[in-house]
Length: 283
Image (cartoon, rainbow, N blue to C red; front, top):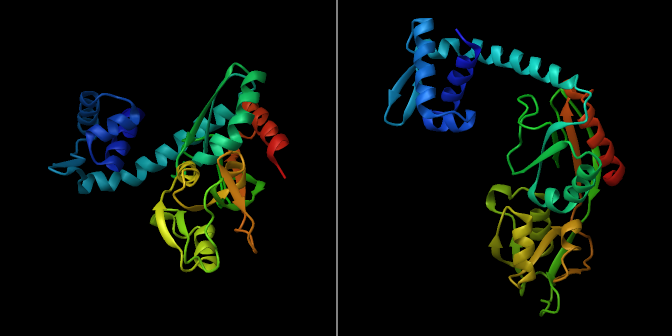
């Protein structure tokens, strides 16, 4: 039995199809099928039932799932431990953040870091999904929620102020209770965000014109006159076509947290980047 075959087993169990599992592991679909057959031959059991909707674990496959996940945890811990010993200022660092934070706050710092450490390759992933530090989907994560995982070292990095914006030079609606206002706000999946609740409270009669989970999209819509938008000030203040409206009781601010796995605390390239990020952004 090969550990790499266990990785393939886990990928198929999680993704449900050979094609999706192959894309996740960056292997070909025929290779995935061949390696799965090899694993099933090694253990003497059929691990998946092939159905029209994909691969479903058999009872035997379900029975070994927990063992396979524990093997994975140990393998990942070994990789993190080895990576954490690296003292060379070269190699790759994978970062994760929201789209607007990566574009407007992190990018200038990363450009400065790249000039200082040209042999370190930084990969910045901007998406709403929270990437796993334990699985090394990311080495350093920036997010607006505190980290609760016991294996993660984290700190509050900075407080982000928010503002209410409108197209500069356009016809400003009389705010009042929002009767004449059109809003650009988060999509329903992010309806629990503090700025969404603030808009409902401050402008209860305003009409929602547009929704997006992307702050840059919201800012562009606002700059083109589609409506009012609550935006992080590092984003909104940087766009010449936007104007911030002074209101009583500004939109709620948010803290940004940065975290990394404790096994990487001695990784020299991570420490170098984190030190610069803290120096430039921490407040």
